[in-house]
Image 1: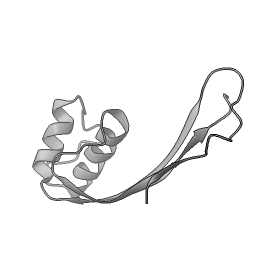
Image 2: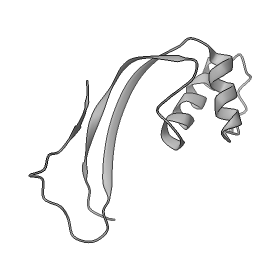
Image 3: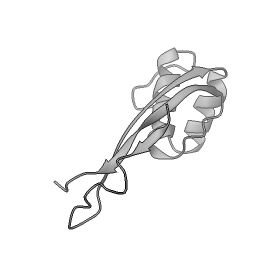
Length: 91
């Protein structure tokens, strides 16, 4: 699935530009230590205190990197990536 914009014909709201993204990805962790190391190097602090070998640490690290810094995740293979993007009303 590709990332789709709501289109040029979509009405542009007045006021601040607020973009709403909906993204889904399916990832295979091929090197958890590399993924967790990259997240830690980028500032992830493992707030839930997962042990390095706990698969939950890889999930948390991947999500943090994905949302905070980059879609390029070392130590994973992207199986699918897609979503939608468009304007949202400011709250």
